[in-house]
Length: 395
Image 1 (cartoon, rainbow, N blue to C red):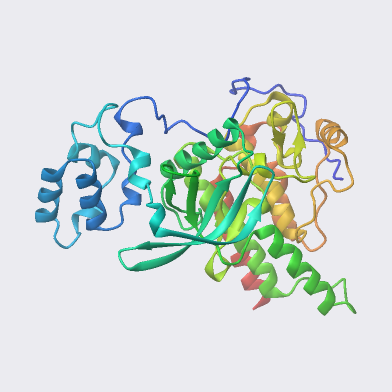
Image 2: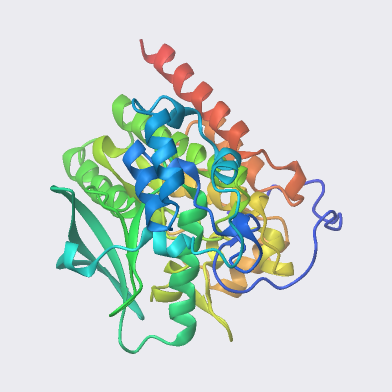
């Protein structure tokens, strides 16, 4: 392990509230109990004029729907709408309004078909499915809970649904399609990622790389492979920049929670449920929940504090996972041993094929004081620079 002790290791944490954090990922922007701001879905989720009209009609606002249709025939106004404009369009929205965020996302069970299981955990599973809407069939992933799931597990899944509603759409975040909350098992329906999770991709390609290059194990990774690995980091940094902008703290950023869409585009997923349904050495059971200790920031391990900057620490560990082709961080170490090593200033060692400038970026993510770590936009900028410099070098 890297034993370079940060200079500020013994400086006390500051500008952080030392208080327990419970439940799933937190989001200060979403409060289902306070006022109209919590009830109106983001306009990023209303893609077409018909979507807006349908939303207004479903909530007994037919007059608004008619006015909107007459004044936005070609959808020009829709492209300039934001949440504030939506509230102006629906001025009477309040906590007692018929408008309900979850009702807006409700999918009729008759339009949803489930097929094979594509993931499972202690309290839930993910199944492949199809949603039919206006003659169009879309492949989706459906999160469900087992009959044995507790009320707490159900609350976690509901919390993940609420966060997905708040986060809205982004190319590097798994998008919400809808939910089934009435008349049967609670299900959350999300975008399907055809290339699986990043952790599995890394392990599979690592095995193939070793098999295909068994006679010359010490050669650097092929150029395209290295570019692809760095691109994964760029994609995740972009998605996490969006989460930070909407004040959402993920708390479980790791390769297992990054899904790969078409063309291997990386997408952040699993907002809150995953750490409760996984059963593996990657999570350590405490009296309340399972914690991903190997990815947790210093202040999360020792102070139970979670912020966007603690997600930055986890991102550094994720970069390490990427460059080590899916190895377990702090492999061979028990949780307590790992925590003592981190407290004493130890860090993960540089992966074999990792460029120096990329490992330096990881180390920046692992500084003791959260305010000394880079932000996600800064990380994306630095990764863009690294990949461009690499392309120039090999040309």
